Image 1 (cartoon, rainbow, N blue to C red):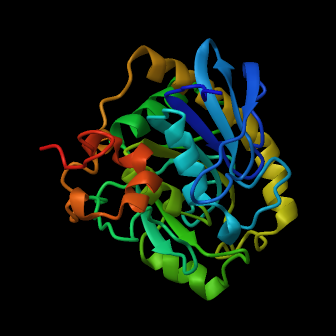
Image 2 (cartoon, rainbow, N blue to C red):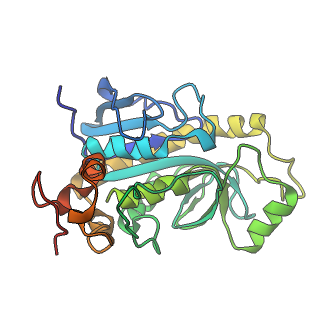
Length: 302
């Protein structure tokens, strides 16, 4: 059976395990060379726009950050034809001006993960994508505009910020939190950077909507972060996130952003494709397709 094709996907983080506004819903199971995705992908319509939704940790939150099958998740969305990903992520704030319940549209990342595979390449093929701007600026601006137009009560929208990605699953020590603050990081989380790298390799525009739930453990006037604290703020944040997503989806459908991410591999592949093992070509065909001459031979388009 042919897979449904959609251009826009939402990856839901902690607390966002489904999208209530989706209609005409069907669950799609996609097998990939990198294993199974976190859960079945839910395909439906949001305000009349076809959208795919994936619960990052599974709908019952059974996957640790380190256990997330990020390659399978992004590969599966690529096979559905996804060109834009809105990633929603619960985060801790590292800045006093970013309060719990605030929204941050991330524009930069710092990597502190240790045990994640963040590339599709290897096994006979080498590629180095440009990653100076790790999110798509055009897609991020759609999120900024959507949040500003909603004018959510008691919520400040921060149009940029640096996401510090740690391995987890433990939260930071106070010394680590202060170190990350000294680096200028804005928020801290455990999931989005591997996704952003893989999305870039898959030529998918990617942007993060970060939902602040706490002040990590650095703030002298607030208790150290706990699961209860995070869950309490998540319940309030998720409703805001759903409103932003619905408005952003309509904007993307009306005027799809032009993204450099959609051609990220054009000058990134170092290995002549006719020298790549056939099994690797077959494995990465959904990603390499624009650069393959035909089914039997391969070359990079110039």
